[in-house]
Amino acid sequence: MKGNIMKQLLALICGAILIVAYAQAQTEPPSSTTTSSPATTSMTSTGSTTSSAGTVTDYTPGAAITLDPGTGKPMRFVIGQKVQVLGPDGKVIANTDVKKNARVHLRLGQEGDRTVVEQINVESSSSNY
Image (cartoon, rainbow, N blue to C red; front, side):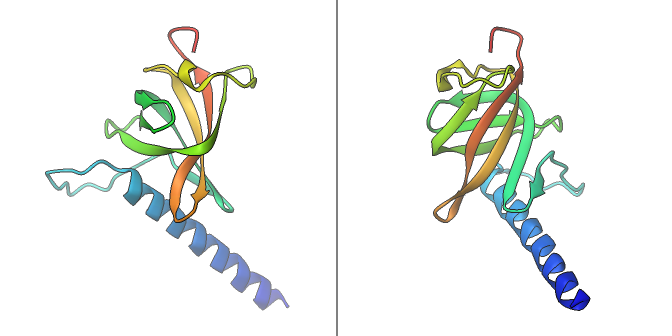
């Protein structure tokens, strides 16, 4: 019994790693140069949910959001059809209230065969949002 649980846990961890790797490959902008240093991101995975945090460098409501997770290498994410946007107080705000330079936390999920942003949590901003 313990062996089966360990195998299931290992399979779940491996699956989560694959989801993160796939999401990262789908969200990184194309690069014309190759680097020898490993990339670091703030993406984390819990079960079937993946998340990322950073500062908004570009945002098109309903289409895409680009974050700098603090590495200087912005990551682009596709916005899901049913995205929910929350302000610092946890209340729902308009998707147009997300501004450049705002600090946000994204919750990513699957929409069909692609990884998309399901929720944007605005943590702080230099303006109202």
